[in-house]
Image (cartoon, rainbow, N blue to C red; front, side, top):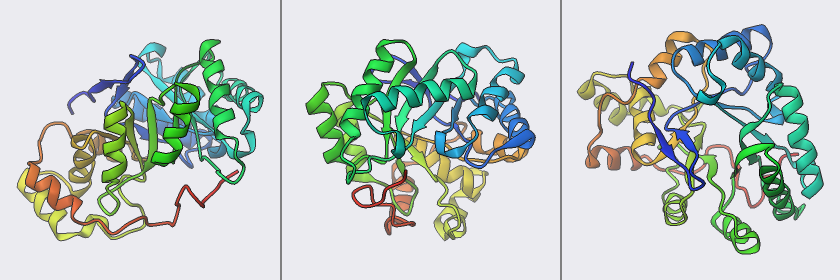
Amino acid sequence: MSEIPSVTLNDGAWFPELGLGTYDLRGEEGISAIVSAIESGYRLLDTAVNYENEREVGEAVRRSGADRDDLLVASKIPGRHHGREQAIDSIKGSLAMLGLDRIDLQLIHWPNPSVGKYVDTWQGMIEARERGLVRSIGVSNFTEAMLSELIERTGVVPVVNQVEMHPYFPQGELRAFHAEHGIRTESWSPLAKRSELLTEQILQELAVVHDVTPTQVVLRWHTQLGSTPIPKSADADRQRENADVFGFTLTADQLAAISALERGRLWNADPDVHEEM
């Protein structure tokens, strides 16, 4: 398996082109799964307060024996912690659960526009970064308008926007906005879980052409479009397969054919109306 490459974020920090989603990885089995991923070359570990597994992620970091500076731990502030001071307290709580001296990437999990506090939350995150509690700050599930508001009101551009993205929902317009403003796209549910995506004919055909699996084709599509996918798997073999996508290249026509599968969001999680606390 080739090493997972990285890119440079707009604040100068490094960021892997593929990471591990940890949703629902809990307990000793969860810790073992995360350790396995680290041993297989994963360097980005994505968690959140609402995943209720920050303790497991921190423990996996310690058990792995990997150099802390070689790992990037990301967490997310939940909706119930929105607000300037609340955000700082939430980060302190995450640090305590993780048992780490810093969070490498802190995100706002959902903007929750009806609450109207995502700018205040962002200001708290800016302060947390200045105090050394976090290294980089970004957002998740933000629209172009929401990103523009953050930038205009604070002057600080998020380094990352983690959003639903897969061949059924390629996020072309939002990715273009990200590219214009130096924001890295990160993909949650990159394989369109609980859908028939991996049985699509074009993916089956390209898997044969490149001697890989349909899963690897989709993950390579993400990376070549400039997005960091974070597939979740507790299986060591599947983890290695998911990360081994940098040894082949899809052509422009092949990328376009995959993107042509577009049909929209799968779970009606429109950030303008969907909210999570």
